[in-house]
Each structure stands twice: as structure tokens, then as C-alpha cells.
Image (cartoon, rainbow, N blue to C red):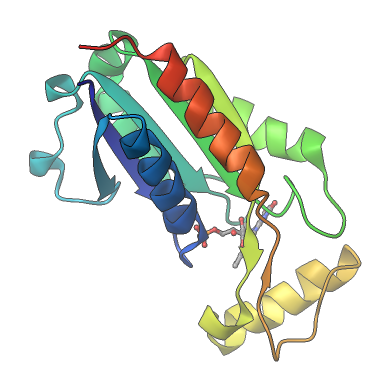
Length: 180
Ligand SMILES: Cc1cc2nc3c(=O)[nH]c(=O)nc-3n(C[C@H](O)[C@H](O)[C@H](O)COP(=O)(O)O)c2cc1C
């Protein structure tokens, strides 16, 4: 049974939810999955002990987290030797006014900066979680989202993730892994 490391970098929790759904789908296909936050103590993270690695991260202010770039660079050789997948989560990838070209640019920039070439990549729409934002972040998001014609009623949260697309991504990855 291939052993998969599934790392996720999530600030408000949507990427973690997506990673959970992917882990569930991979486990249904009889894969063993260790799902860990990417900011886990680096001493506890060793991609080299896994058969395959998937990483998911969200976009804030046009970037994936800096600590994730450092982590990927540190483990570049181990990653290059394994079947890998990367998914990016943003509001550009979906929502009321999607900007798929911008979502693709975020993803491409991250891979260029890290020198990582995962075999499978995907961009998923995230969520607007006003209930999780502090007052400053809420104000920033009202402006940012309002400019794009999105939902600025902060009395509720909005989820845009296409869960069927997430399942398809997980299934494609599962099929690409040889039984150990
Ligand atoms: C402060 C802040 C900045 C954001 N900046 C961007 C951005 O530059 N581009 C974009 O497409 N989405 C942006 N988003 C949307 C997030 O990518 C989206 O909310 C995602 O679901 C967050 O995932 P997480 O909950 O796993 O952190 C931003 C969200 C917040 C809260």
C-alpha cells in the first residue's frame, strides 16, 4: 500500500478541509495517508520516508506562504524522486468573479520559485470566511472582495470550492500511484 504524505498550509481552514477530503478519497482507494500541517516541526517532516507526496496551500496577498517555499526547497531532491502533486487554493480559482489566469500565475510562480516539478497540479476555489477574520482582515477583505463584485455581507461565510473537482483530482492522483 503506497504511503502518502499530504502536507497542507491553511490560514483560515479551507485548504485543510480540501486536504481532508483528498485524504479520505485516497484512503478509500486503499492508500495510507499521513496528513500534516506544513508548519509542523521540520524535524518531524521527512518526505523521503514516503512513497508519494502531495502539498496544498492557499493564497494570501498574491502568494503562497514563504515557509512553504523554504520547506519545498529543502526537500527538493526527495520530492523529485517521488510522484508528487500540488494544489493551490484561492478566490481567483473560483467564486463570483473567477480569474483562472491569475490562479494559474500564482501556481506557476510558486513552482518556479521552488524549482519543484510535481506531476499533477490543480487550482481550487477557496472560501470567504468572514467569521474567522479579525477586524482589520475583515475590512481588507470587504474592500478586496467588493472591488471584484463579490459577497461583502459579513454576517455569513461563503464557500466556493468545487468538491467534485477536488474528488477528481484525488482520483487522478490515486490512479497515478503504483501499488507498493
Ligand atoms: C487576507 C486575505 C488575502 C487574500 N488574498 C488573496 C489573493 O491575493 N488572491 C486570491 O485569489 N485570493 C486571496 N485570498 C482568498 C484566499 O485564498 C481564500 O480565502 C482561501 O480559501 C484561503 O484558504 P485557507 O482558509 O486555507 O487559508 C485572500 C484571503 C484573505 C483572508
